[in-house]
Length: 261
Image (cartoon, rainbow, N blue to C red; front, side, top):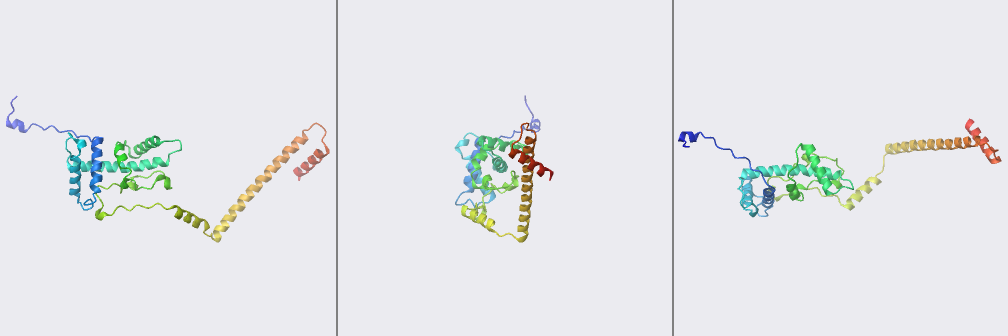
């Protein structure tokens, strides 16, 4: 059917659907970001636009994406922001799952619990496990202290990990400050210092009061137990039908006198 120029001008354009990112594309993007941000020569001297242009070029040149339509730089930047945010949140969920791990649970059990915690915290399923497995051992995503080495509360929100995996390299080559774990010798010295620290007169008095109170309670328990034993012995002697021996008669009389006194 023939369409006039005026009709063609008013023909609505078909809107293209949003292309979903495949795990392969995500892995290439992660590799591009890591390699570009850690470039020993220019990694810390790049401005925002140049930084993301290099990542886009690295991404487009990957042989793993042969035949895949090229992504725009803005789309790549937006996808990285989503990956970074999701991985940082899941780092917190995984740490919380590790704290709740029991002796009979394996890695798969911990991972299931981490997904459950993520879903409960953010009301959404975590779909970037492949990205988390690729980034979890990188310095920017493992800067949170190990769960088993700290006594912090079981669950932390993402504020704890808000600094991890920033979208651009740090300026002037300065890496993020990471707390060094205390050494064995330092830990022992600290514990020894804490134990050997002299207590004040008030603290000594409180400790003595607590000890005396515990001693009185223990003393009363012992007296009560002794009375119960004596009562049982007296009941046994009184209920005996056969004539009592001299020793039993003397013991019975003593128990009766103690009971009446």
